[in-house]
Structures are given as C-alpha cells and as structure tokens.
Image (cartoon, rainbow, N blue to C red):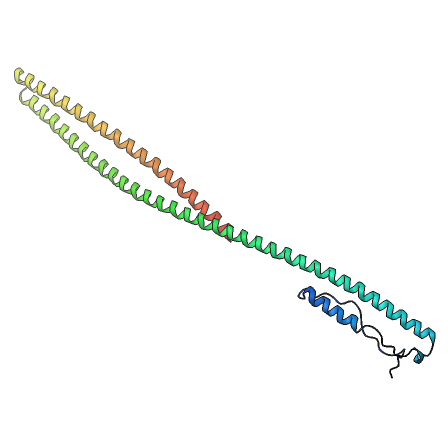
Length: 235
C-alpha cells in the first residue's frame, strides 16, 4: 500500500530548453514520456488524511497536466521553427556555395583572358623589337650612305677647285669643267634629294613605331590594372 505524503519531494517538471540537434520525433517522444510518468499515484482516497489535502493534490495534478500540454505544444512549435530555420540556413548555404562557384568560374575566365592578352602582348613586343632592329639597321645604312655622299661631294668640289686652278688660263677647258661640274652638281642634288626622301621615310617609320609602342604600353597598364583588381577581389 502506498501513501502520498505532503513532504514527499516532487519531480521537477519545469520547462526545458529545446536542443536544436533533436528531431521533432525525439522531442515529442521525450514529452510523452514525461506525461506518462506525470500523474501522482493515489491508490486509495481513504488513505488521504483530509478532503482538503485531496483537493490540493487534484489541483496540483490538473495544473501539471495543463502545464505539460502547454509545454508540449510550445516545444513542438519551437521544434517546427527550428526545422524551418534549418531549411532556410541550408538554402542560404546552397545559394552562397553557388555564388562562390560563380565567382571562381569568373575568376578562371578572367585569368585565362589575361593570360591570352599577355601572350598577345609578348608576341607584339617581339614583333616590335624585330621592327625596331630593322629600323636601326635602315638608319645605320642611311647614315653610311649620307656620309659617303658627303665625302663624294667634298671630293667633287675639291676636284673642281683643283681643275679650276689648273686650267684657269684655259677657257675651253674651264667651260668643259663647268659643264662637268653642273652635271655632277645635278647628280649630287638628285642624290641629296634621294637621301632626304630616305630620311623622311625613316622618320615616318620611327614615328609609327613610337605610336605602336605607346599603344602596347597602354595595353600593358590595362592588363596590369585588371590583374591587380582580380587579386584584390580574390583576397
């Protein structure tokens, strides 16, 4: 026979915090286990010392059952909210992972494009170096020809002066020398004109080369800036 004593310790049925790691079924199962063990066993009402004590016990039992139902409902509601929040976080994680993947793909595309541009620039630089070498060779050859022409001109002038001095008294010879001199001067003028034309062509080639070098430098700056921005974005 069991007696219910007023000083008997009462089980702690205070509301517990919901463990986010628990599933809804586990939470419900724990709550049902509490409710099954909740009622206070009273086997014989006659064993209660007074009617007041009995009513108090009934009231305590009723309040506990009501509290258990409310707590169970609240726990289920919290569990549902946790499940919804977990789904939202998973969706958010999937979206962030996709964004990271898209960024990585964009980075690979930009890096590949930058590498291709760098290869093109290197090839263009090699081509410009070859052209620059050809221009230097042309300028050197032109300088040599101009020097030869000047030396030839000096020789012709010296020869004419010498002939004039030697044949100063001979008019006919002077006239012949004058004609020869005019012919030589004409050839010299023509040769000088040709030299000037070569100089202008060389100057034009140099100008075009400088413009192309300037464009390549601008393109190199643009590629360097793009690579710098991509590194900052990745870090």
